[in-house]
Image (cartoon, rainbow, N blue to C red; front, side, top):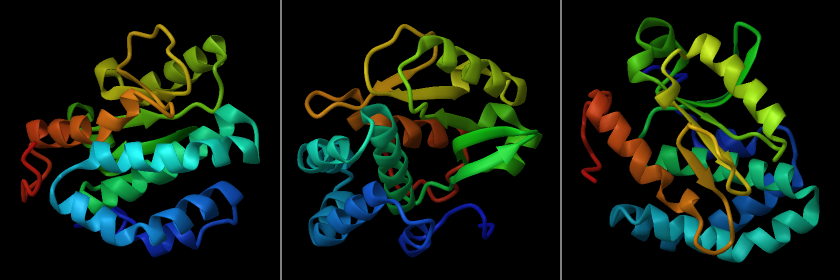
Length: 195
């Protein structure tokens, strides 16, 4: 595995200070034993539901709702991908285009877009802004089905979309879908998670 493919939780926590990330990682650290147990049972939806139930209100009280939840979604998703042993990179730039999360990595995107997934987490609900971002991403990832969205309310896009909400969040299912994508594409050499 390349060094850039995954980041440890420690690396995530060493990035620039952010009260939302600090709160999230404090909560994850306090819940570590429970999270490890749920991870071993491949119960990622339960982990996400638990984090949303216990962190959602506090996170949106810290700042602007869409931005705050976008930061929460990005941090939580990368933490869970790391725990699920799914190679990923986050917060990278390619050809001047910002990528929130890419699975497995930029190198694979350059050589085989079919085996590469981009998760876009726009920190807005403005459909025009999101559409512009999707159009940018399609310049580097021509396979539209391999660009997924995480938003704070249901919007009508053709891309696979996950909504991050406190209750009944479709976001809870994203890890299962990512692992399924990775397994179908043959990227997970170890097939550790059989979902």
